[in-house]
Length: 114
View (cartoon, helix red, strand yellow):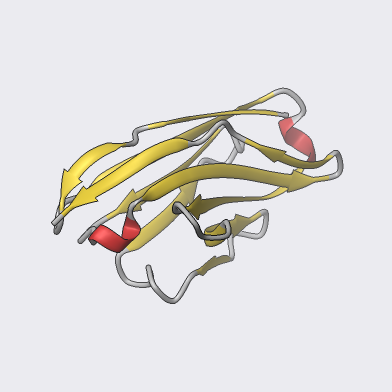
């Protein structure tokens, strides 16, 4: 499985961004996909995950503001981020888990200015 993220950038607080993750390769082996983020000096943390059964989980800090969505073929997983805050600034990584292990994308920078 290969993952390529897109959609990061600079936005003012209160604004929105949409991240996309395109999956290729043995996507039929994927059982869950998610978005993680890592700010300077911090550990990488889970932001949101969507599973094959359609269930989702979100970090408490983004509930009600972020929405994760996948297409039925697991080709693309997106993260709609609304009401962005400066503390959302981080490198965001797409992640896929399944029968072939765990795969990470290269990361995309999201910067929220106050």
